[in-house]
Image (cartoon, rainbow, N blue to C red; front, side, top):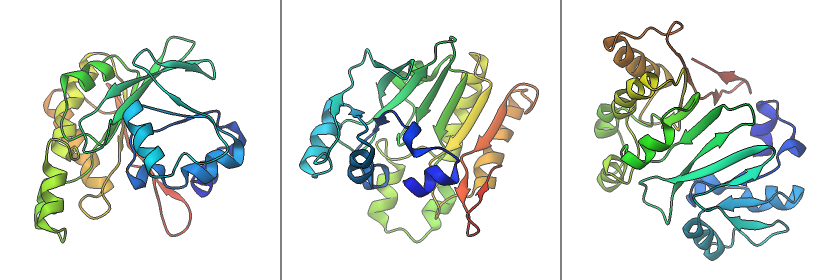
Amino acid sequence: MVHMLDTCGIDQKAIQAIFITHEHSDHIKGLRVFASRFHIPVYSSRGTLTALLEMGCLKGDFPVEEITPNGIECAGMLIQPFRTPHDSAESVGYRVFTADGRSAAVSTDLGYMTDTVRSALCGSDLIAIESNHDVGMLRNGPYPYPLKRRILSQTGHLSNLACADELYHFAEQGTTRFVLAHLSAENNTPELAYQTSVCSLALCGMKEGADYTLHVAPRENSMGKTILF
């Protein structure tokens, strides 16, 4: 976690709170050590906090608080959670409202786009949304069948096509910036995720650069730099 902050040029001491989406290991690895080191408060849904407590991840020198649907104020911003469909205790995404009237939303780890998620994201200035896998790559890849079935289920992960199909709706409602996130290293590529969304929006008459901007969340390469498409 510290290494990734350094890679992104973020001062560790600038972190004022940690908001957890769910308890899966790729989202909470290093949580206890990092939060204890800087005494950073941790927020999440009741179900996720219960799961983290049972896992021993909340045993440290930091405050823990449940975030309700009304959200909390932190660092001059309002952070509101919304439920996401994922195979975990009580998975959520977050929408952040800034003091100048703007907002950004983060929604990863969702098997499909529910009305709840769609409503929570709608009208955000920026949306970071899951574009996890290419269905063909996943089905023909090395994963065992039970894992493939889990990823493709309604409590798994959003595919490139499923993500791309939603972007026009959000762009119509005023979102101008998109970030594709949570890409699978085995079943996707940044280029493929990017092109799938660009082509989908082009079919709806929208042009990148004129109507919206689209980026893929950077991955760290072997040189310690980041790649952005």
